[in-house]
Structure formats: structure tokens, C-alpha cells
Image (cartoon, rainbow, N blue to C red):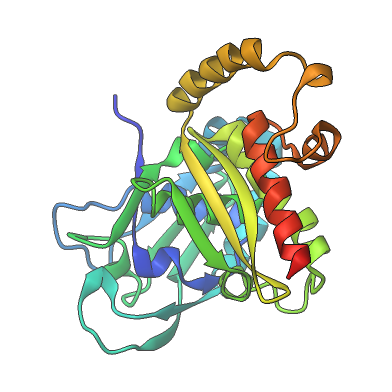
Amino acid sequence: MSQPQIYKSNALVEAQYRLSVAEQRIMLACISQVRRDQPITDDVLYSVSAAEIAAISDTSTKQAYRELEKAALRLKRREVRLVAEPNGQGHKRKIMLTGWVQTIIYVEEEGRVELRFTKDMLPYLTQLTEQFTRYALADIAQMTSSHAIRLYELLCQWRDTGRREVEIGWLREALQLDDKYPVLKDFKRRVIEPAIEQINEHSPLWVKWDQRKTGRRVSHLIFTFGEKTDEKKGRKKRQEEQKTLGPPGERRSVYGIPPEVIAKHARPGDEWEDAALRALETRKSRQH
């Protein structure tokens, strides 16, 4: 039996909104039920139970029950800010502020949420023929960071390229962080690093990240990623290369950079020359 799939217009993937993990699980579980092969009206009722949430997220049913009602009630008030037209239609830039659901019902005795999407939301979820992103519901089901879920979607949008560069200000707006984590160090520590850790732990993708400066200011984040099956092959290759490089204590200078400096720039999973290149780039940026 195939896994439930999430289909979203790219405009919705890049939209500005904020949902908690529990709210995301409700929304995505219902989105995975949307039929793609026929027109859908805003009369259709979708539902998900606490038991189903617990099963897909590998959490206790008791915890799922506790979170479901609160999340369901908040969802009715959640808004999403969309830019551009759904499904790739139209060329004029438009901004729309709308809600996710028009009706939401919590069936207390069953621990079940039932909802209807707003009419405005349907074109971003159904009959998508171009400019859409797809991934399996199971890919994000065990994530406990809402930022990880959002970042995973943004990476899946560029899954074929294995690289995505985003402007930090744009990403902050997409996540609707408002005044949270204004200092870049805090933004990376509280948002980016935990999200990357969870994607690497729970999803089919491995991901690494770096940053790029505009002038002296760090302005962009660069994500490189791929399927974990490919990463396993890469890890085997690195292990073979390490036999040539030798243990860390015996590694050589590269590009004229001493081994101890390269070691300071090394990140988990790096090859020795990757770290040397990063050290070289850092040296060049300081010279400018």
C-alpha cells in the first residue's frame, strides 16, 4: 500500500504562515486525503483522529488527544499570506491573506477533528498540474519542530537540484518569526540547526548548510541535500578516501592552510578538502 502523499502548490510552500507541530500534523494529514484527479469543492469534510496522529508520529495516544483539541481550535484562527497565483497561472504579482479552514469540528468522544478547507485554499491543494511540491506524509510525521517541517518542504521543492539558496530575511518572513531571534547567531541556533538535525534524523533526505555574505553581512543560507541512499554511497567513498588521508592527527596542509586551521573549519561528514576550502574562503573574506 502506497504512503499518503502531500501535494502543495509551490506558492503555498513559499507562503508566509505559522503553525505549531500539532497544527501541522492535522493540516497535513487532511491534505494527504485531498483527491488530485477530480474537482474538489469546499463542502468536502476531511477528518483525522488522535489515534491516527499518534500512529503516524510515533507518539502516545494520550498525548495526541491532549494536543488535538487545542490545535484544532487554534487552526480556525490561523491565517496564511500567499504571493502569486496558484498552479502557476497568471503573471501579475498578487498578495492574498486567507484562512486554512472555514469550518472545524472537534468530536470529543472520538478524539477526532473534522474540517473543511476554505474555498481560497483549494486551488493550492488540488488539480495541480505544474509548479507543485510532493512528499510523503511519513517524511515529516515524527518531526517535533514546525521549522523543520517548513524547511523540509522548501528543500523538497528543489529536490531535483539538491541545492537551495534563500535570503535570510525572506525565510524569516516565511516562518513569520516577527521579532524572534533578531541576532543571527540565535536564529541559527534556535531555528536552523534544530531543523537541520530533525530533517537528517527523520526524513529521507540528508542536508548540510552554509552561509553567504553580501558585503560584510551574512545575507543568505545555502542548503545542499540529497537522498540518504546516495549519502550512504558517499559515506563509503569518504571512508575509502580516509585510508589515503590518514587519521586526523596525520592529515596534511591543503592550499597552504595548516591542518589545525582546517580542523577548526571541519563539520560532521566533511571531507578534508571541503574543510580546507571553507577555511580558504574565510581567509579571503577577512582579507577583503
